[in-house]
Image (cartoon, rainbow, N blue to C red; front, side, top):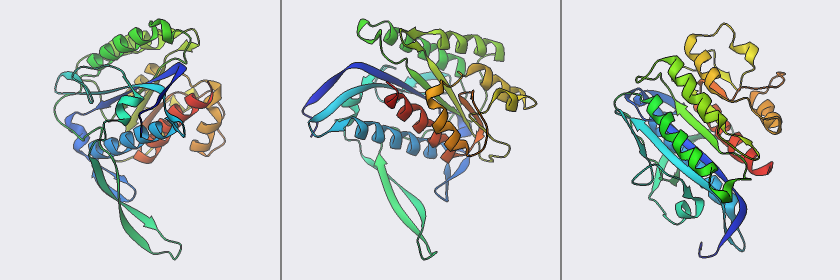
Length: 284
């Protein structure tokens, strides 16, 4: 099926870095079903990867549009979720691996008003894991190296800058806040000729009260110290993303928007992943 690969002149790059520390064992709701945050994040990430492959598939073959790095961090270490070592892999590599599908239950509301539980599945490139500490600084250090190397390859010099998605439910255990701010700033300064890296921090919660999703800067005033840290770490979303963000927020807020969430539910987290990946594809 994927024997013919068509190479794009300018590729895109995505990093998805996932907190897999012990706090990710707490439960959240996804499609009206309770499950661990680790499992829910694996499902939405695998769904996004499946969608990226679908976007790359055309009648004349699989187009090698994207490079993807899947990173996990926990237990005082940072590791690849697909390879022996953290690295970018072409979307064609993911597409040809055919991992075992992972099933999960969702609740559908029928037109009759009846609720029905349906079993769905996605390819299981990423498996749930939750243990140990939260080495967030070490993760950012590894991601900085990966992204800097990708941007300095001659064939990527004019590409849309990489987008880094970071999904977490907790705070760093390996550094002070200010150290994390400096490392995030270093990541955001990495660039191609088309602009600087876009860093999106997605904080999820078992109890998504007083949540922030792509907030304006004035909405961050008065929130707690950790939410302000996430805002300081994150990019400002470029204007081509604004319409999709306004639809996700479904209110009257106007840009600019900060590339972060705090206390988000899993549905909003998936929406943020989709906006970042899909919009980047369509503005090139």
